[in-house]
Structure formats: structure tokens, C-alpha cells
Image 1 (tube, rainbow, N blue to C red):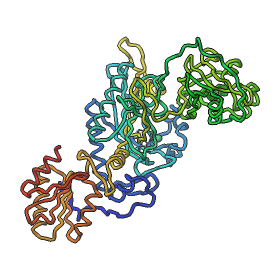
Image 2 (cartoon, rainbow, N blue to C red):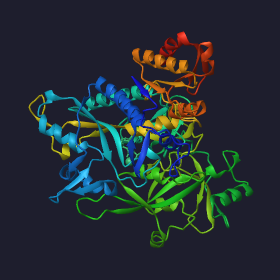
Image 3 (cartoon, helix red, strand yellow):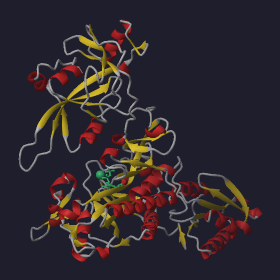
Image 4 (tube, rainbow, N blue to C red):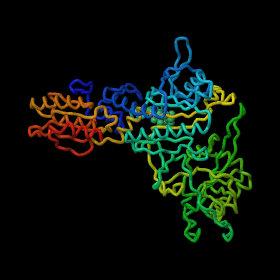
Length: 589
Ligand code: ATP
Ligand code: MG
């Protein structure tokens, strides 16, 4: 297959588009892969579409290999199914809602759990039909608050979404495992640098949800990786390894001190060091101080009752900040707010700035603590009186913890779980999400299936997404250099780019012959046959467009040599008679 640049619908740009911030966005526009129509809405030009289709095909092959059956739902959907699961409302402003001429509510699908669950309900009734895995590669619509970075976060985008239906929990585990493997195959074939992150903490049920994050500085997600082994997790899901408990016996008694002006952790540490306070025989540091942060918990409303609120404390070592996102994830479905002046005023045992765990225990306030606050650890903390602190306040002796909670910020260098060394903080782009949904949607749609014993049972569901358009942007992001794109062979719009950079008629003729030969061998070839374009411009375009191999019939052609540039790598001089074989060898890896 040959495409001639003299005919291709393409206009490369030397200037970055004004609205582009990240490299992939700049390059995909400049190289003529996509064109903006509206914020977060893009046209796929010929080169972009070819790449996109190839990414789709890789995903399709791996989904078919695990027994997925492809189908296609419309993007234009009625309101009712989304009403049933309350997502018509819950989706908020992200949902594109519209009305038809009869004034009926419609929406543009942001994701399709509802449609798949109701199709299975309508079509299947016996356990013999299960398990089943269905998928589609389809256009989704989300009115994102901040459409960003070109097709990385669009308002219209392509997603592969699949859904597994199993009669048993073990079956769901297997379906989930198969998807996980399929996703690994996809990312490996596309040569993406990625990490599989636990999306929720172990407490929520092991491997119930994992995200595939592409490693990238421009990513919006922060995640951690271990220096040893392959532990990776969203910051929200990081589990702090609890230190060993310590003996309480023999520890000095708690002592109260006047600490004038020690209103911040920094000043408290300064005071402690000045006063010669030691912990385990060494100088006290911020990590030996304990902050008691007051929060208000809101328990989910039952029926139409108002949600109940409760005052609680979150105890965190003083060298760390409270990470509100981690606390939110740990408390879910309970919600929280930081306590306000009124809460302090209503509870006079709370001395602002000097709250300590002893008064919390004495007044029946629930104490949630960082896992480091294990039994036997000694802390410098508030003494529940203005300008006073207590030293040697020992957990399990002077105060008790009701529950341990992951609420402290995660820092680079923290210990990783399971002896996997320490943690590094990285940024990533979410490319895929696999999720054991359970029976939420099948119950909402009352999917009743007769099991082996003729009893009614509700199948359990898994939901698995991969962003196809986002994947293309990620490839551009991870593989570009300052000159342009650099596609992996598997999804490059053309595997070979041939340029004639020589005015000689013989060179043009040889170029024609070369592309015919390459094409006859089954390769897809982009041929820069433009007669009036300078070699310099041709080289620049070749780098910008990013085909993996560029063959140039240039200066050395007179000596029977063709220059073969490996994009992002070395340049070879190959005798003209060997060039086809050499290219075939490289393409086939
Ligand atoms: P994000 O946190 O980035 O918004 P999400 O959690 O909303 O992602 P899912 O609903 O799990 O994503 O969708 C599955 C996949 O679809 C994502 O992993 C991502 O690859 C892709 N995706 C989601 N939103 C967009 C978007 N606005 N533009 C492009 N791709 C997207
Ligand atoms: Mg989203």
C-alpha cells in the first residue's frame, strides 16, 4: 500500500498551536494528525485515523482472544436506563443531555453499563448462557470541566468498554484476571511504559479495582511505585506498613510542659530541641509530634432522613500533612469536613491548637489514627490547655485509638508495603481501568437468571475500559523528541517513509520502484514524491510525522547507496540492492 505525499490530505505546521501546552497536543496538530473543531472535540485527519484504527485493532485482537464478543451500542441514548441507576442525575454537568422533537430526554452515552446490563437481562435467562463477555469500541461523550491537552482529555473520545457477566464471584475473578492479562498484552504490544495501580485500598477487597497508568510528567494522576518488586498504587490506595508495637513497660511517664508560642509544629520542635527532649534516646523531630485534626463525619442518609454527623479526630505525625483525598477515599461512603469554629465553640474540651488525644478519649470522641501510631509509640502532642504540650504520651497507655486510617500524605522515600523497598512518587495518565462492579447494575435492572437448581440468581458484573484516543496521545507523549513523533511499528500509520531528496530523474524512478517493491512485500509506505520540495523540508517533515523507518534517496544515491534513518536511532547507509531486505528485517523486528 502506497500513499504519495504529493496527494495526501496533509498540511504540516512549523508553529505550535496557541492553545497547546503538552508536547503530544502540539505535535499531533503540527504533524496533521488531528484538527480542533471545538474545545475537546477533534477531527481525525488521514494520518491520525490510520493510527487510531491500528490501535483499535490491537485492542480488538486482544479482546477477541479472551472470548469477548464485539457489538455496538448507539451513542444517542434514552434517559430511562440512566434514570434507573440514578446516573442521569449523578453524572451532573459531565453528561450531555438533549431533547428530541417530541420533548423526550436523551443523552450522549458517557459509559454503557446500563445498556449492557439491560441487554443481558432481555436476552438471557439461564445460567447455561454464562459467563459472557461483551465489548464495544465506541464514541463516548463527557462534557469534561477542563478538556485538556488535545485528545488526551476530550469531550468526544473513543473508548473500548467491555463488561463481563458471571454467575459466581469466582467466575468474576477469572473474567477480571483475563482482562488484566489482555490489557498487559495490549500495553506491551504498543510499547507503553505503564504501571498497574491498585485503585482502592486493600480494605475494599483486594484486586477489585486497578488502573493502568501510563508514566508521564504531564499526567494528572499521582501514583507511587516501589523501588523493589512491582508494587504500584494510586496515592489514595497506598497502605502504610505499620511499624512493630513497642513495649509500654519501662517508658517514662507522660509529662506536661509549658510551651509558650509553640503554635506550629516547627516551633514545637524548636522548643523540644531547646528543652533537650529526647525520643528513644535521640533528639526529637517533627515525626515525633502528633497532630490531632478535628473533622466532622457525615454518615450516608438512610431513606430520606437527614445524614447524621459526628465529630471525630484524625491523628497524624507532625512531619506530614493531612491528605484530604486519601482521607476521603478511606472514609467512603462517609463524607467529611474539617471542623469549624462552631465545633470548637460547642465543645469546650477542644482547645484549638492544643488538642490532645487524652481529652478526645475522655469525651468519647472517635479517634482515627495514622497506622504509625501503634501501641507503645511515644508522642509530643497537645495537652488540651493553651500553650501546653505533653511529652511521652504513649499510645495504648495514655490514649487509645479507635481505628487506624490512611489519611497522611505519602512521601517519596516512605517504606513500601510487603518489603518492596521504598516508594517513589510519579505522575501518570490513566489509560485503562478494570473494575469488579459486582451486582450493582444487574440488581438495578433486576437481571434474574435461573441457576443450576432452578433458583433465581443475579449475575455479577465486571467493567473494563481503555481509552483508544487517549492511547494515541500517550504514545505521542511518551515517544516524541524535539523534532517530532515516533510511532511504534505496531501502530505507525505507515511503517516506512521513503523520500526522494535528489533532483535526479533516476532517483525519482528508483524511488518509485522501491516503494512498489516494499508495497509488494506487504508494507505500508508513505512516499515523499513531492517534486518541488527541498531536501531539508522533506527531512523535517519525515521527523515530524514520525514513521519508524525513513529511507532517503539523496546524495549517496549516485554511489548506489540509500540512507536508512531509524527514527530516534541510528542512520545506516545501505546498498540499494539490499534496502528492501533490510527494511523488512527491521519492520519484522
Ligand atoms: P479520568 O480520571 O482521566 O477522567 P475516568 O476515571 O473518568 O478517567 P473511566 O470512566 O474509567 O475514566 O474511562 C475508561 C477510560 O476511558 C479511561 O481509563 C481513559 O483512558 C478513557 N477516558 C476517560 N475520559 C476520557 C476523556 N475525557 N478523553 C479521553 N479519554 C478518556
Ligand atoms: Mg473522568
